[in-house]
Length: 98
Image 1 (cartoon, helix red, strand yellow):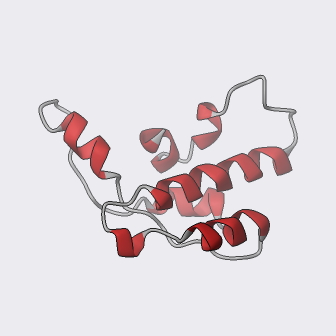
Image 2 (spheres, rainbow, N blue to C red; image 1 turned 90 degrees about the vertical axis):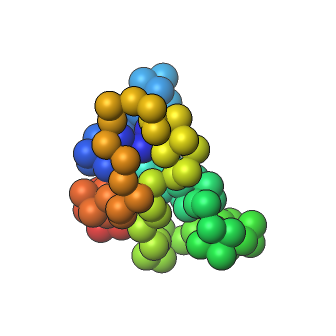
């Protein structure tokens, strides 16, 4: 999910059964994915509170902060050949906050 989101291909992570072909549905699902990444940030201070997550889900005009790569992913790929990066995905911001 993280790799697809960073590549601007987050819609590929969405189950085809849930897609209805409209841009608004895809945008809403990408927003949910974006919020999910915010909720699993390593630093608890960087995670939204439950009430803020509800506000984020209900207010599409609210700009979301960009998450960094989740720690769980870093731990899983530490022994692999995948690049380790805690950088913010700038590509994803174009498809989820615009």
